[in-house]
Amino acid sequence: MRFIITAQAGADRAEPDAGGGVDEALLTAYMTFNEDMHKAGVLVASEGLNPAARGARVAAAGGKRYVVDGPFAESKELLGGFYIIEVGSLEEAISWALRAPCGLGTDDVLEVRQLTGAGDVPPEVLDIIKAAAPTWSESVWQARK
Image 1 (cartoon, one colour):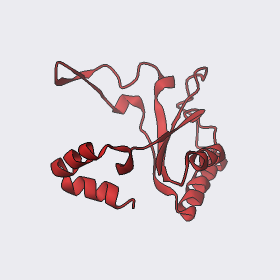
Image 2 (cartoon, rainbow, N blue to C red):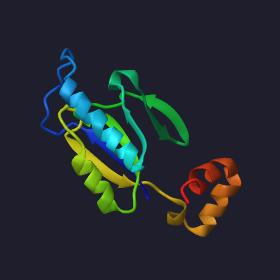
Image 3 (cartoon, rainbow, N blue to C red):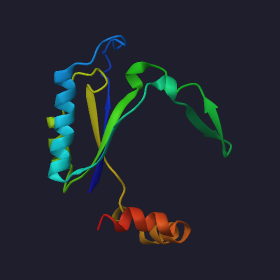
Image 4 (tube, rainbow, N blue to C red):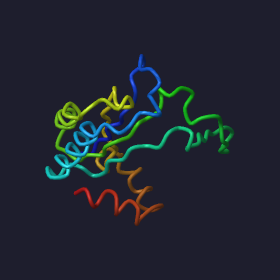
């Protein structure tokens, strides 16, 4: 099973100090955590996200897409980054999240969510997906077997 662990600031977090320097010990803790997950064979991807000022928010109405203000109204809503991991259970995903370092100010809350797999999709829907996107569905779901 694949899970995404997203990181964001807590609701009562003050604005992060943009002028602060790099905390070498904290950065080392994060990279060691990434290395531990990689060595354990569970890490699929891990990335930090650039500040909201470098993004956009696209909404839909009436079947058309358009750009709206954003991507986030407040910095506490900004995702700081994510991990995608492949583990055997939600409990194992939670155990990795509990080991994650904290202290950047954009990582106070970690949310663990299971990603959709082929086994989560009804067979008739899976048939439509395979017909419409054969190479994509093969690369995503066959690689996980």
